[in-house]
Image (tube, rainbow, N blue to C red; front, top):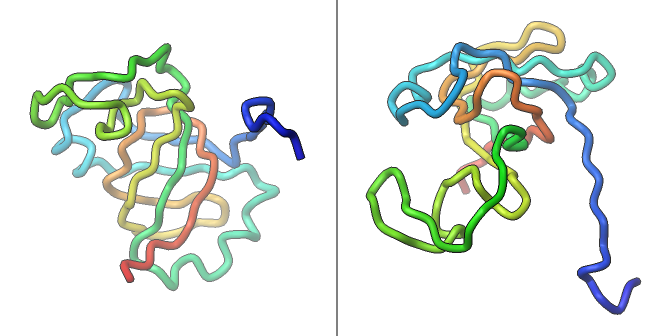
Length: 133
């Protein structure tokens, strides 16, 4: 293992992409009410087996259009200036987003979800069942 953890390089590849009507920044209400499709690459479809055992799932994604970041940012939801890690801004050091969504149904490699906080074309990195406990 490297003595300096800053030398670690992490490479991720999308498992699929978001398909929805949101093309840019949108209000929290609009995102909460929007139905989205998560279209998984076909080689990952088997990994969806039994996902319908859960009403909600966590979707991890990459803010692919976000450029740069600052450590202090003005939060959109309350106007307070706060550190990037105390905000939901897409302008982050690693550009990773996560949202808990309602799982509506699954058709082969396509998940139908509601409440996804991501725009059309967003790369999806991972999906996990949401277990509130």
